[in-house]
Length: 340
Figure 1 (spheres, rainbow, N blue to C red):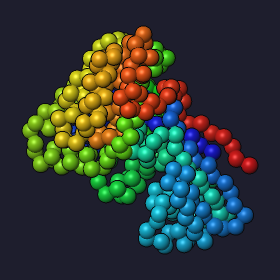
Figure 2 (cartoon, rainbow, N blue to C red; figure 1 turned 90 degrees about the horizontal axis):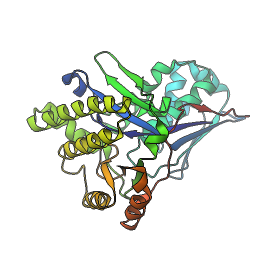
Figure 3 (tube, rainbow, N blue to C red; figure 1 turned 45 degrees about the vertical axis):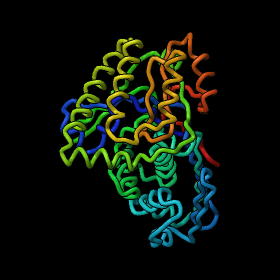
């Protein structure tokens, strides 16, 4: 079994879409890993069948063999099917041919939460399949593999920063550079930070692919205002990295508020009337800053406040109709439990 934390995106999101970050030298994105896990359980079978199960959607799909899976053009569970087929082609075919398996996945986050759900799930499944097939796939290849399969499935550009908290945990600065991206671990007091954060679900699943594609297309079409917005987001992310390293939480909150003010201008549906209402309620009850998780349009919203007002803020947001999502900042990424 493998479990992976979800990602809580801070300043810099959207810049991880290639090639947008190439136009902003020094671009980076910050994220935090939260203990709303994506799970994958893999069990060896006595026959050659491949059984894929999603606990979140209550869907199940069976294949008589690896060959049958790879021949089928469409799947009800395409991410699972693509990953199994990929490992079959990458040298794990002997394991998958001689022994079937059952893969069951589920998530501790609501659907469309904006917490990098598909990214965390992909990393969890890759970890399980890498062990099962004994392909010894280098960890450095896990993120591009997951990213490229997701792009192929959703049909629009997607970034890769959501995969880092799933793989490593903790607080990260993801540096977006030509040729490669790389992770810098931000060694900060995670307990002090999590005491200042609240995570709520709006009840409205977001459409990240749609929002990202609109921003991506407008940028490449030369929209000047959008390009200025992303330049401002890049500057804010860089400043927040410095504030994180100094553990200046007051400045972190100010920069978070600045980033959201810039981001919500990128596309008309990044915010919603309900999200705007929650933020107004939050400001009246101690919130220093708030931002939508992921690409917006729904999903989760993260609030930042001083610890002394956290309980008051939580009560006010719940009364306003938000669903509180208890969490901690995940100290670890990879967690492995051996199967029988």
